[in-house]
Image (cartoon, rainbow, N blue to C red; front, side, top):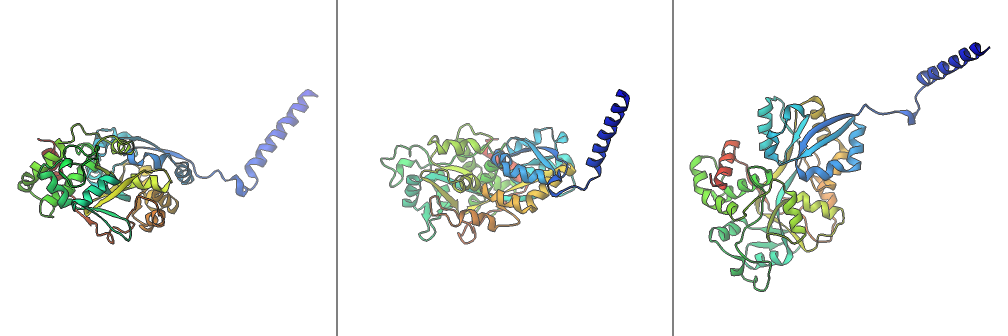
Length: 365
């Protein structure tokens, strides 16, 4: 009797399993695609984006989970790239170097970008304005930094105390310069050299060794005044927010825009758009099929593009996404949704070998 009961129970169990396997799947039963972990290295400015629950959820819908470590863009080549699915530096030059190192044929994908801007507290911006180094558009509130005038101050060795309007401001002391990251390790620092060398070279891209030699003294001064430089744009930005460090800080527009979009306090932070700048093209180098899939999603997925704009980036495939995030804001700081309308000129980036020479020149090599 017990044997019969056991057989019947087993048949019932098998029948239940068969029912579960054979019955039609309902709308709420779809488990979605199999999620594959995609590993890589990213710049610190993208860490918050990849940690966003909405970003993780959208990627999971597409079968991807990102596992990423942060490091400086020019340091990514020192990572175990042959064991990673992708590398995501903040500009094209290190991406091309990584592609060369991995001997990849596919062109890297640039899903979004962010122009380099200069951060200053409002009183500092007003001092620059009094000295014809900065100006503010009365209609839009957008601030502009005049790069020629700024570099003239650096070449002349000017101190803040010598500028009109600086008296009584205890924060404005010492030589005029801006804090950047280490150009040998970080994209933003290297792109700063690209911009400054372009302006110093008569608004022409540096294209030869003699032209590197010509701009070397000023590039060296711009770097030497800073002392020790970090490899990440994150720390100078945090120092600025806590009123520590230099009055002028080079940053990605996305860093400031993210705070503003999230409604977080920015105090008297002023975003100055250099009249000649360069946009940092955040570029994905996909080593594996999974890495290339991630790159394509970041460029093409509408939900991800909206989330990229939420973090202050400008999606390549939808420039209006950034404008929608910052365009209707009435609070300070003011952003320039349309860079052309704000008369911001984009400087070309020198060829990689010449950029490397500019970095060596700035570092005193």
